[in-house]
Image (spheres, helix red, strand yellow):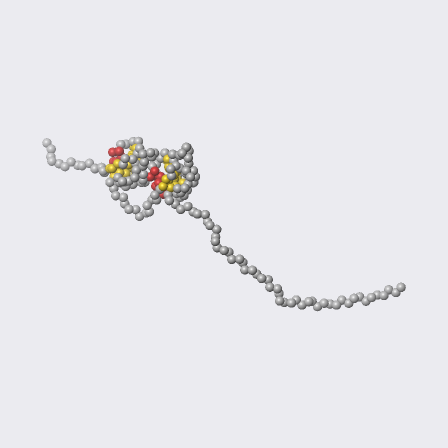
Length: 226
């Protein structure tokens, strides 16, 4: 026998979408890694107010704050992290009062001259995490990325900078860089220095009077008598 009653519904889980491969811009980290199936990662993400999406691969997930949509660009098939996927909630990105992160450009291979390292070396991080770290570091203008490791640099890179050869030991790394202004060398001043005014030494108009000559009388001759 039973009474008509209303079953208490369990907490509903957010509806998640999934990309074929991980997105290019994963956003900032919001926790993790967490080991478990995707469903367990979804529950953990729902319990985390900062989590809007997570990357999943090799039995673990990394929570992110990025608000992802089905049209968000994903990595290429040959990318190092192409075995990861992004799971995301249906959310609306809030407009931020701060300036948007600059668009990063990348080189085919890492540069020959990467510049000086800044900040700390980061391992087991996504490309998006590396970009976020560079944005947060005021002296970071570019970074080299490969094998999920991130090396931030102070070099202001241009598309004309030389890259390593295809058989170099670090050829699988790439350089990612922000558009930045390379300081041009100072040009010599075109201002013509005025020559110093010539100082003309005028001859003195004062006539020096000759000193009063004293007449020297010749001594009186002394006649020597023989």
